[in-house]
Length: 236
Length: 292
Image 1: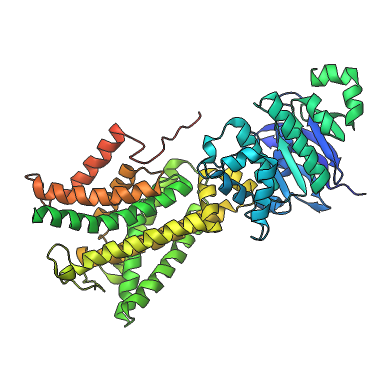
Image 2 (image 1 turned 90 degrees about the horizontal axis):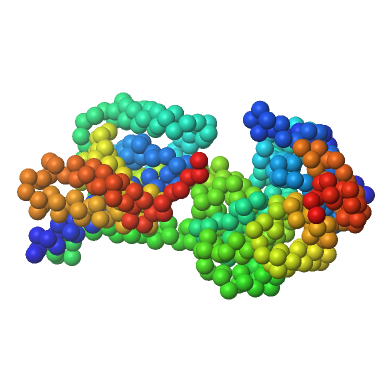
């Protein structure tokens, strides 16, 4: 089976500073993959590189087609949903309009029923549907960001630190829902996390990244069981 | 008492034009974070186009509609050709761009149609409105067209997907791209709409101030005052600001001794300064906090 996303010799730059050095990894369709590593290792940059939001060289292929010459919005239109760090909430519009925006590239049919599906996953969003999204708590905004990304009906979902700043119970719920989405809707997931323990629980495959390079890869279970890796890279 | 009512109604009528100009300014400000100094000249040029169409014998509303469409296309072209390349340029580069645009449009209008003052027709006539001496039919028409325009814009931004996409692109551009919105075209669309709104203001005010290349100078300053008063981040505020500035201008001209017609313009400038000192975000704006 050819991989859904294939990254080869990827370099990324912020101005003169090189953030990724020849990164290589791939994802198979239908899997959950986690990218682990410390602060500043290049996790966020990797996700931004996939969506062409930083200057890169190297090859990124999605479903066999190169992404390098596409603009961010055209990459999204291929079915790649990105839940950015900081959640990217459209604060000045309502919760429901945020969800509609998630589906703005799709035809109108099925949008209303998808919004109801999101409300079933995240009942709190239904309660707040006509509120300005900027008034939501951090946890609620994170749920909204995930729901908004799902409204695209993505083939691949990129999540940047979904657990950041959330209460442990909410994080647990969120990851359960992500697992469910992966199983039921066959959405391939790439999740970047500081909370390695949690990410490894739902992931099939894990990569460990350090200073812009992949230093370790393997089945999530093996990485979780490898005490050396845990101590040196994952900090638990 | 009649004088007061009369002045307030007249203020609302000119205020409608200021509201349109303010709205045009705010739409572009929301999209690219710069004040379009050439907004008035764009409106003036549109008004000349409509005048030319009328000279060629088109009926008023046909000329009105064609001008609206041409202005929209013109606004989009200006963005694509001049301001898209400046998207990441420093503020001063953009300011220079606006001033250049101002000078180019002004001179072109003078070159094509010369600087003599021309009469411009009103489709509403200038008889007393409904037999009342308070306002004329043209003033009532100005208010009526503006209200229709505002309702149409409200419906567009609230109920259409493109309107929602434009609001999203103006509020958080990066997230907008991440849901697949082409933010660059949303900006161009904003320019087109601002140009069209400005053309309406120009065509409605031309029968009052007469048609000539410098007709919109004063109007644009009132429009800026309206936008600042209502809040540059709030289209709703800009509209309210427009009406308020119109009323304040008229009342001050009538009741403050020594102001009269000649000193009305400084009132707009005084208003801008007062608002910026006391409440920089305006009546309805959000304070803008920048992380540095």
